[in-house]
Length: 362
Image 1 (cartoon, helix red, strand yellow):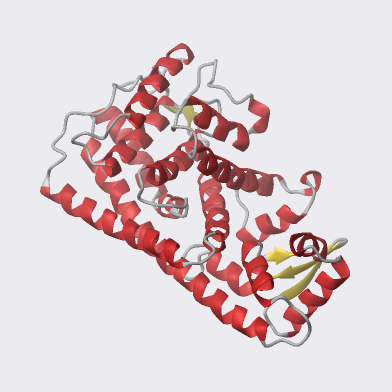
Image 2 (image 1 turned 180 degrees about the vertical axis):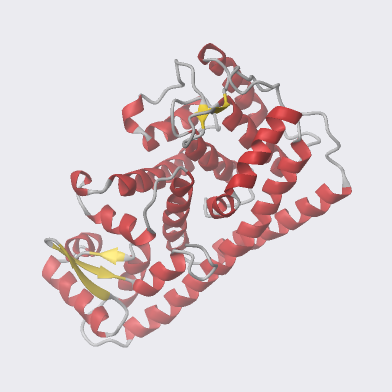
């Protein structure tokens, strides 16, 4: 197959034996791992304590796949700065976070269809108009410029995406919803409906599909960490479906990734929540009128704080917020940092966990 010629993927689903024993065992492992992750999210009184760190980690990892490189710490710092003072990679990561949260909220009232898909794209790349591409597109080797893949022509995108939506929102029938999610992820990337941001949009849609299908109540799966670690294999298997119809290898690979990342995410979130409980109890012992529960929650919701930001969140004067932050610095919970005119307080231990230093990520 000539990669320079547009490829229009055939409609889903492919005709394969979805009852194969290897696949059944993998599905059971994926359902079990997702069930444990989801169960843990119900055990935490304020689920936002898990959601906020999860999404910033996933945002950094997903952006890194597109060679947008920053760190959890730099992205969190950028969130405190005005838009015009943010570095471009941090802007992109924070937009990813906003896109996930926006899409998750929209699921309450909308199916995963045109409005949600284009809304996510618009949140990610606000300067691109928020609609499907109207021009040809191609994926090139960034070093050589060789064309690796040419998606369907622009005039075929609306009908391809209408078919994608139909399969996305149809009853699963005999196909397990997890297999369906993996098939849809390939199909979205093959259609490549937008001029840019297709990888990021597709990864958000995959996790939102798991929420919509009841596997997760929160979009907290760090799937991009697995894709990053296996990046060349991920693209090789996407290409294998296009070139040879090698669906089974693709499905097994991504289901294996869901198993691995659901387990890893559960371990990370357990560490975050254990740290939260320890530090909440520690804050309660500090002298001064600090609202222990509110303070503990704020430094987990936003692991880098400024007095102004904390004051706004707690409805106190920024001088009172400064006193609270200094008290936590004195207790060794936060670390003080000056960046230009900004006085910041960094929750170092949480950032280390969220950055993946507990699971061998960068």
